[in-house]
Length: 395
Ligand code: DHB
Image (spheres, rainbow, N blue to C red):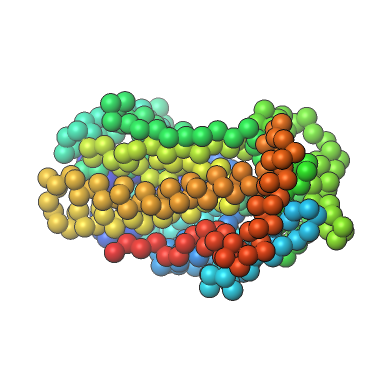
């Protein structure tokens, strides 16, 4: 079988690229190892930058505007007090609470309705001939091994990417940092505890108060990376969350049954180059960020917008010989990737207690937060990063 683009990975990044390629009339196939149900049931982050919402709306997916919640601000909470960051007033932009699983559903439904060729349950076993003008992807579906030849292979296959490992050692540069903490994430049946998201630093560690629906909240608290979520009773989870957000203002979380729980690992990583021959990497396959600030999905969608722009030019020129043109994608994407890396690492380090940190360091972090919120320039710096530094510029 022959197509023009094989997109490995049918998460939000792979499906958005598929949608954009279809709109250009570029023949392509998406191969996704998991089933739709598995992806839909994986909880991910919930915040979309304004530019991500614009990308979805431009693609004809406007359910986010009807069912998402626009948030014009966030709160930073430390020393038991709220400090409001007015994103709207500081940047003219807001963010939207709209969980990643909804973004996936919208894209998957749209591809299905448009007759897109998305093959779920297709496990890629080999990628061949990346150094030639006709790479191919070998995959297994329903126990049958098949081969797809193409002009381009896109690795949109997430943090455990198969495609990333095809970058030869001789050219691959990997950058990463580890964090000595993780998040204990829960979905609880209770109405929201605050109108906007609350990022809390306390002497007992970080906590994040987020939301999902009028009946369910999404809450997280800092824990050890090897914490076993099954070892916690609902009462213990609530006690831990409440003591982290407690303060003289009497703020408390609305409690209810804990319906789901999981520990989320923290890691920052970037792999370069993002092109090798006819293969390009997008999203988590190319870089991962810690969850603080919810940059992962936003960055993946921004990658896709840039890659689509470069691929359109490349296909339109019909000048397939000029592979270097494809390098423009990596050059343009890198600016946002590294800004998001900095932002996510900075937010994480400022808000979390480092295990065994000194009294000096704990007080310095509070001073950093105080300096930030008491300065309009500081609040704007945070707000610019949080809302995503403006539109994804493709020119
Ligand atoms: C959510 C997750 C985040 O990492 C974040 O910074 C904000 C919100 C969420 O899942 O709702």
